[in-house]
Image 1 (tube, rainbow, N blue to C red):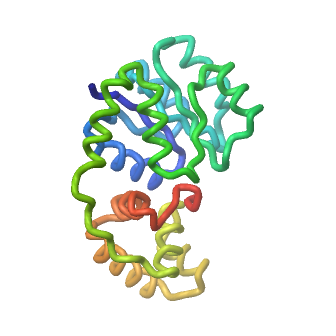
Image 2: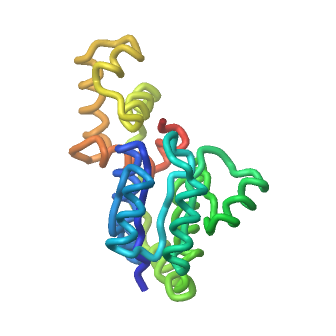
Length: 212
């Protein structure tokens, strides 16, 4: 059974990377990726996803208000809130009161996000065997490890910085930044920045909590 998922995140490369990773799962269908809470409400009205991943750390949104509105409009839809750090017990209690099914720290990586999506879906007992079967396959070859400087460049890329801004922040030339990017792309076997962020996240070389 496929879980239809909508994603809302204010950082563009992070939400694009998260969308790419989720869409690679056989038991998950991403029906939309948006930036703001208002866009998420519109997405839910149009596509009616079974699960939404809500940016609980968004700088410009009232998460409780949006989650409450979604819960009232779509009682059967599950809402997962993404936090920067580990949620405190009091935060979890408040989240559940306004209709959020689970709070997940970005520091936990994709495993926790996927676990939350599968555990909140009403068809979880039928979805778990798919995940188990995927884990029993031959493990993929380990990716080439990025250097500390390449990880720093990719972190800034994921935060939405331009090459000029990265150049200023790291006190290196614009050309050096571009060279770093090309080496990162070659090592990860990708063609663009969003894919680089998503592949590095999946490989554990770039943690979600290090973006932003």
